[in-house]
Length: 110
Length: 115
Image: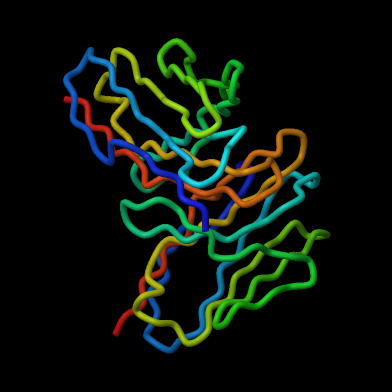
């Protein structure tokens, strides 16, 4: 079983749609959680950290459920510029390293 | 945010030659840097953790004699792919953070093609 699992997609949605991505992680000792965005042939960039209380940044909302070891990202009012791969990233445990999911590809259509 | 610069951004080399990739933290000191590899349509896979002034820690399955890592200063880590082969062709990315518990910033990545 992979340490961080995501639905690879692709998710093809029209502009203005709301889309949700899910992620599960296997190491219960993980301490920090993030969503990164990666554009084609570019490096990943931090989108937002994820907290148990949930956090929102504009059109983006992230949630963490430690009991279920589940992380989510909600994007409202999708824009064409949101098209990218969204990486679920987990850190912590014994090694404190960043562990990446395979990413979910989002394609927002005009 | 902080800036991590990686050089070169792309390189094409002949099979059997060695390639050096540099990773620099431009505006902060990084005790630890990480090297990742990403094959097409796959996720980033951690290759090794580079520690300033000490030996790198390699992930299972990564050959330390093939992927030489040097972290000679708090702002520079290098990855040398020795005797490169076509199967080493990949996207290599470094990351750095001020401390183990703060945000990691990524270099722009190096696309290596071995012909």
